[in-house]
Image (cartoon, rainbow, N blue to C red; front, side):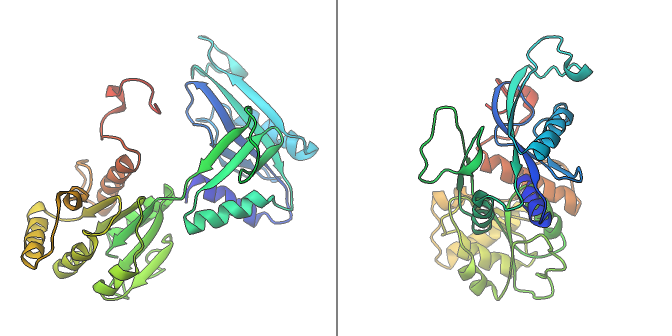
Length: 323
C-alpha cells in the first residue's frame, strides 16, 4: 500500500478523532523527499509517512502536536544549507531548504479526502491546492502564485497474467509501492483472495475470456507468468495487439521466440511497435533466482519504464537524483 493510501486508511480507522497532516510543499537544493510527501500524526502519537529521511520528523511532530491542540496551521521552514549545520544537535548535511505545512484534519473530514480516496480506487488523477489555509480540491478554484499545486496521479496498473506462487511476492511488492494490481488466471484454486490478499482485482475465466475483461490504458503494465505454455501463448495472442505501456513474459527467450513464431504462423500480425513493448525474459539482470528476487527484478524493470529511466547506478548519474 502506498504512503497516501496508508494515510487515508489511518484517517478512516481514526473515526471520531482529529489528526495533523504535514505536507512537504517546496524544496530548494537537496532533500530526501520531494514535494507532496506527507506525514500524518494521530492523537495517540501514531505516525504514518515521512517528509524527510528521519532528520526533520521529530520537530515536525512537535509542531503537529501544537496544531492538533490549537487547530491553527503552521508553516515550517528548515534550512540545512549551512556547511556545518547543527539543527537540533545534528549535522544534517542535506544542503537544502524545505517548506512544510502542518494542518489539522478535523473529525468531520474535508471533502478532498473522500474525493482522493475515490479517485485512487477508480484510477483517476486528483488535483489539490495546498497553502497556509490547508488542503483543498483544485477543481474550479483560482490559484495564487504562492499556492502549492499537486496532481496525485492515478496509480499505474499492473496485470499479472498468472497466479502461481512466484506471482504472489510480485503482487505484494507492487501493491506496497503504489500499483493497482489485477491477478488473472484460468485456475480458480490459484487466483484467490487468500493467496493474493493485496490484489485490487481477481479474475478467473478461460484465457480468451480473461483477456476480454482486462482494461488497458497508457499506464497499464502486464506480465505473463502462467508457467503453462498454451496459456502464455493465448495471453500473448490477445495482449500483443492491444495498446498499453509494457508487456513482460516470464521464461527463457527461446520459449518466447517459439510462441511468437507460432502466433505468426497462425496469422497474427506483429509490427515493430507491438514487439517493442514485449520484454522477454522479463526483469532486470539482478542475478536472483528465488520467487522474491525474481519479483524484485521484474518490479525494478517496471519502475524504470514507468519513470522513463534507463537502469543504472545512481553514482554514475550526472546531476541530481530527482532531476
